[in-house]
Image (cartoon, rainbow, N blue to C red):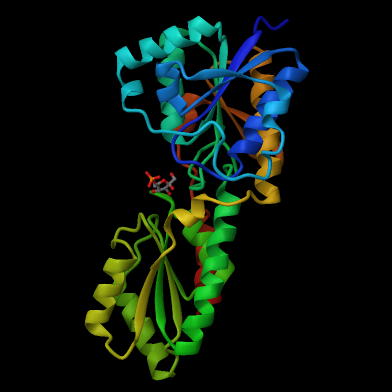
Length: 326
Ligand code: F6P
């Protein structure tokens, strides 16, 4: 039998479309099992400040389709200190909270691990980030929506790039991960994709573009992951321009557009599944684990493993993308 009667949910780090669907799932699964649920505002910052309020079933109505997070989010420096975590624990004690569902990325998981070791408060991590850089799940909540937003933007750029025979460098997010760039590049039929995980050469790009230029193909799309080792789209475009002045080149940084918007159906279903799995884990007295979905099945990973391993990029997809763009 579960000892847990009161739990809390928070969102932390960069927001991701589908976080609201996950909050809804946590609240509704918990109330179904007669647990009291609290929402912690602004992630670990709100935990420290005691910004905590009760959430009922009705409070999470009409949010499944909304981007962002109704709980707000933050990146808390104070939670990285012992003193900050002590204050956070005192807030939880004041509300009688016995378990937490923390929705976020690697930073969120790291905070959860340290805190649950220090204070023996069970925390279950739910992967919520557009970057898809979390070990223990095929996809993180928000990734699917972000890549769909990105390819919609690239499709629009393609129209104008084609009309003007221009070379476009399009930068996408992803921090140190190339997942967004790889999927956006494949999905939009880009000519080149610069990833953090590969040794992409600007000289090689220039050689390819010269070859295309001789065939009078001046319209080209290059997708650049923000974490690429050669720099962002601006830097790569500048280096290419130095050697290729017959190309009319432009740069677009899609930026935070990728973080907003109504979540895709895939993200809503993933978020609902993982929110439900996280509460089930708390009821089963699990501690310091993260939930994920692999090959369609819910999977539990320890927080230690989740933060120490990478969600490796699919090398076969990289090779396929190269062949399709030749
Ligand atoms: O982790 C999500 C993410 O959007 C990354 O892709 C990006 O590097 C970063 O957050 C941007 O963070 P901020 O919201 O602080 O601009």
